[in-house]
Length: 109
Image 1: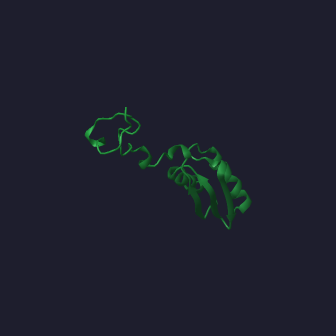
Image 2 (image 1 turned 90 degrees about the vertical axis):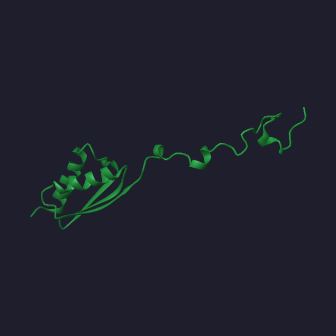
Image 3 (image 1 turned 90 degrees about the horizontal axis):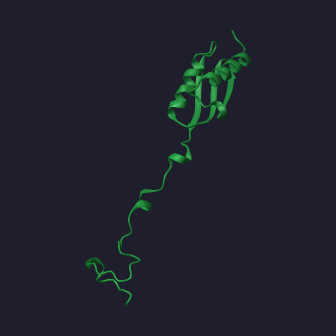
């Protein structure tokens, strides 16, 4: 049976060599052949790839995947309401004569 230290070093090497896993934010702990991954990754595909990489290491009995998925801030955009046009399309036009604006007060001119 392999030692936990040897398994941990091999798991880290496997995660580092796998291009589909961003390993910089992953912590590895091993106890009795059970490998625990903790930290965060950018996608569910990376989370799954981390588990697969650990499974390829000799001596691993089980994998506990505690990786959380944090989407990059570039993917998080404005809320849909902030992209809606204003309720009055003529707002800011001083002498609008559209019927929709007839009931609104106009600046005399």
